[in-house]
Image (tube, rainbow, N blue to C red; front, side, top):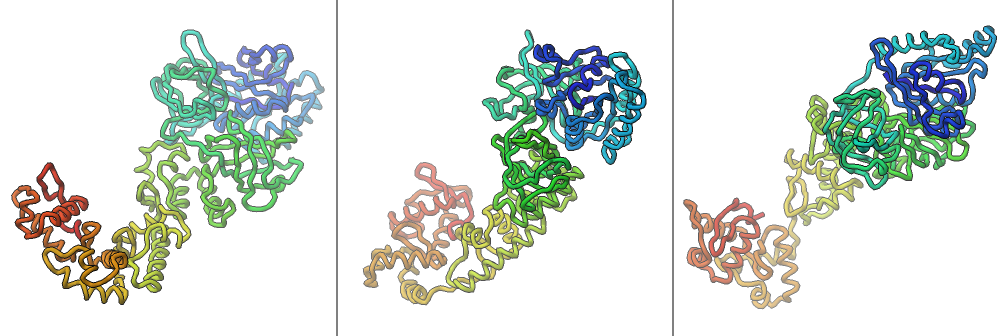
Length: 632
């Protein structure tokens, strides 16, 4: 079990840790000189059969960022309050941060009882009990101690041993992830980093990636050695306080707030949506674009609050907000963050991360807010499938991105789709509701187009997306679904209703009747010859013939040659006959079989090659595809 101490400056946190472990956690020269904890301190001891680690955090308000870096959700809180001072400003702020970070178990140490009268100790205990009412410490034991005189220390050890035996470390299918709070070099070993394992498991020789805003971002390292709670180990798992010996990166290039995680779950964004709970004693109303300090475990960034649900947020209330950071954030769904005022130096609040991607449209879009509100409920329950279902009903969700946002390995994908009502299409997740809704929109759009443009073959993908005011992938997936249902069809890159019959313009219909006899021969004349024969302008004739070809009345095999589809089908059959029993053929053999001149034969065969109906090898050709290809 890892115990995080919290409390006001000079209330005896460091002294208490020394009494419990024999270790002075003030390791810095400046801390020794000033008698003040500045950075995180760590100590370990065995209590009974349990190995317990202690994270001693600074109590001074100037070092609150270091205090936040020492907290993880599965730790046990040890709130330290001095009997002579009682509840002080940093007592309140530290306690607020413990709650905002989601800690669920703790013990309260009422220190320095030797310095006050017994009646005041009783008063302090009553004050503390009122202070922690309706919180996770409401029923926590309040232990009266004096570390300097060794009063009550055994009671603290007993309480922590009981807590360690009761603690249940939550494990899940999530990948390994650790936020680095220290990096240093050890002679003979090299780079060593420390931090609390937030999820997953790591073993010796595992390869990990570094998530950083520095030059090491996405660098791959190998784990050469592991210590858990200051003892050698083959592995570290969720909740462990661990130090990892890394190969492949110099220690001076790693900074506090960098991340160690698996390559497949490495992702970052400058936006995170959180359920922001504003503390009751914050002195101001929260307004849009308020500059803040954002603390995400050991990482820190400057950011702004983008309000989503209203124009302001009052103290003591909770709302969804976007946090837009100056640096990329390595947040995952279910993480907790702390936000502090940029100017006042006070904690504004904090909350649960419910989204890690920037919006595709306006941030305050009504449909986006509705999805975020539902997703937040699923994240509170750690309901992974439910959160995907909610999002995939609204729009296609990239599966790998979704898995990464939850810090889940990709081999979990099969489980994700089992009995979930979610389908995978084009590497995106969608629900049947999405397919039905978007399919209806596409069908309606096509039917409207056919009514107003009966001569049109249909609409291209980009046009469908624009007319439906949506993205390309949504339309592609909807169209795939409709084609499977035989509701629409795709011809020449254009989508149309399956029952749609193109209405040929009258002018083209008359032209076709006029030129059809000229083309209904084994070797039709060139376009130029037809234009001369009919005394028509060549450019106009080219436009009209291309129009007939787009309607599939003609097939263009070269820039100056058009065939009737029936004649091209006859040519394809000749090629099939020549290739019976695995034979191949050359230009001369096809010319003799078809009775067509050599130049036109070459045009036909090159058209066949382009359509992947035939394949040329040296001077020989072999049929390699279906005859339908030449008519497509």
